[in-house]
Length: 191
Image (cartoon, rainbow, N blue to C red):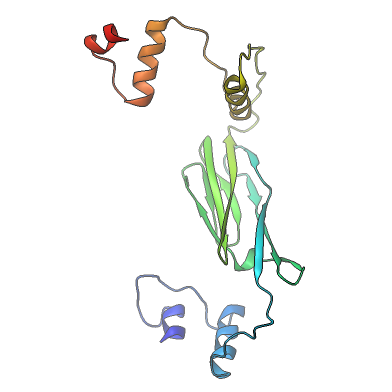
């Protein structure tokens, strides 16, 4: 049943995960034919994982970036486990990722693509920009570490920061950004 479900021979909600004759199918068959033995106590286990690149900027719709996943094991070895990882994205409108770890840019924006292997899930931010976007970040004052972090993010996204504004405009922007509505007259006067 395990083999039939994994190839889609028996319908189930997870869909087909293996193709008859591929590397993983053959490994599962060999394991089953051997009597489904447990791993020996001496088999090395993954102790950490890293995803490369740690972040990416994609220039235009259709541009690609391949992720590479490396795992460190308890015996000191370091292995490429990209083909064994599961890949996900939190925003496939901006960056789609396929089962091999290839990220494809779509619309302008930002996505967090993730790789899962063993007990680890590691992510990598991906920014998608319009192709060939020319941008010069203006000189803006940084009064504290929050300004520094925000300016770094805006610089990466190639977005010019808003000008300084009055308290009334700031309150309106704050309400729209956080609540999605304008402040009421009572909320405005209370502030």
